Amino acid sequence: MAIVDTSTNTAVQDLFNSKVKTATDNSSISSATTTATGNQAMGKDSFLQLLVTQLKNQDPLSPQDNGAFVAQLAQFSSLEGINNLNDSVKAISSNVTSSQALQASSLVGRSVITQTDKTLVDTSKSMTGSVAVTSAVGNVSIKITDKDGDTVRTIDMGAQSAGTQSFIWDGKNDKGEVVASGTYTFNATTKNDKGDSVALTTSLPATVTSVTLSQTGGEMLLNLAGGTSIKLSQIQTIGT
Image (tube, rainbow, N blue to C red; front, side, top):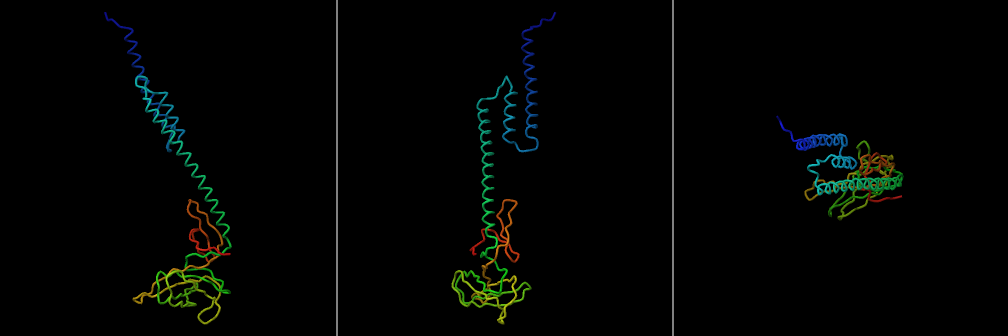
């Protein structure tokens, strides 16, 4: 005849049930992970949901260490702080962009000087530009061409010292005739010791016609009369 120890059998059964529950609980945690996160990056709400699920379904025979829970809570606090910081940075960035847009819009219709070789010129009045001379040279010349590439005027500035040197074009061609208003290109050159032509940088006045805001957070553009565009930071001088 078989003898059964009912008390021992009950303890064994309880142990077996707890193991089954642990396996079920692990499945619950995995399911909660999938439900909470899906295919997206984990946020603070998902993190808290998983932490609560872990607390509810921990193994009673091997409970989670208190230090581990403290570490997880610290991670949750850090995650929440980072999210709040991101929101603050986005708000600041939006305010800065709005402020820049307001400042840039006030430039519409005004004349600015920027580094360029092409600009729209009203030949009924004189135009002042400048050339960046890197070192003292014996001669500087500026060739002015129209939209078709034809040379209308050559300005001989002679010897120049290093620095920003100004020039004036009265809107006339080499024959002394006033040319039509339009877009003109200014090519400044000098000669080096070997007699080779070296290009120099010119800065010209232009009128701001509109402002283009970046949709990707980049720097806004000022659209100039004549069809060119420059960044707000490229303005050298603002006129009337």
